[in-house]
Length: 499
Ligand SMILES: Cc1ncc(COP(=O)(O)O)c(C=O)c1O
Image (cartoon, rainbow, N blue to C red; front, side, top):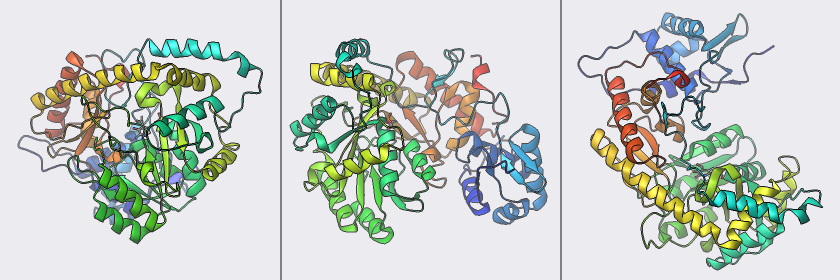
């Protein structure tokens, strides 16, 4: 029986490992022996979820060749990983990645920390805020009151509740994009929406153009759907989309789909202006590429009196090029798991039909809660609370990082929930591991890249403020010192961390 469920090739593993290089170590730093550095590198990739658990590793000889090291070095590294529980192997079946019992799973930084770790670990893994109470409670009560007529039905609404579809359509129309309820499908979060779109449009081996960097979980979703990701580099700072580059990539690669986050891009926070939006749509149209526009962050503009540019779908009146994805997760609360798609009616029909073989529908009660919020004006008030919180968090984090880590560079975005930080030449992967040791969980840059790009970055979300933001920056500075002195050794379980 095979013990592995996927495989990582020698060239691919070498590329991932080479991308972890730090700047040269400073005086006083300790360099580990070559086999140890290799074992640590592989362990890091596994812990970060960049090489899956139960992935078959290349044979020693192949990896030695790809890395230009001796076979003895690879053999010793594999042996060390085996002893530490990060590698399983059996004669004839090869070696596969593993995670030792008791170690935190290769968290994609998603699960909230267990209660016993709270208070000791500062979690900067997830760019999402707690519910803006009292609105969650009110919306849930409102939903319960609306429930009785639905309780008499079988409860499966594969396109979403008619009332919510109509409400969402009305909101697009009110913002200058005429939309019928038939153009809306309610999904299980934006993730559910994009999963459905990828399955409908991009079979295995199909190309999808993505911003580079881009939102980590969507990249992983696309990889797992078998897509080949075609990265299109974002410009430095908040400039975002270089349309000449987009034109070239779309013309050369002719991808079936392209995925963009034009409103407060995750992770960079960039906001596309109207000219970039128009040109993105024109470029995609002439390349025959369907453009998925993820508007998850669109309501989180944080500057007073800020005018948002027109929606990307406004530049596609025929509705043939753009598929828009929305979500209640950032504007309201991720725990509801409500998202939606706006597309041409025939695309919606196909998505709905395909759903019969996926999740069948989205929970009724949560849809009613969102509908209650949208129809009572509670949504606007809740989003206002959200913005105030995100603004306060952003300003606190920016000030604290500037103070504690003056060599780290970033542009302060006008909205969204993320700060994309260049870490002064330090490896983001190593910072992530060192962070776990000093009590701050932070996702490294390569999680947001394709094939190991962005090793010199981390993403910091606007999820903490005040003294916690300050302490987060102090711990990040401690992690940076650990990385600079070449220390990160065995990873501690954050659940046992005591501050
Ligand atoms: C750009 C982007 N898209 C999608 C998601 C996930 O959205 P949902 O919770 O609606 O699935 C996120 C969450 O961080 C995001 O930042």
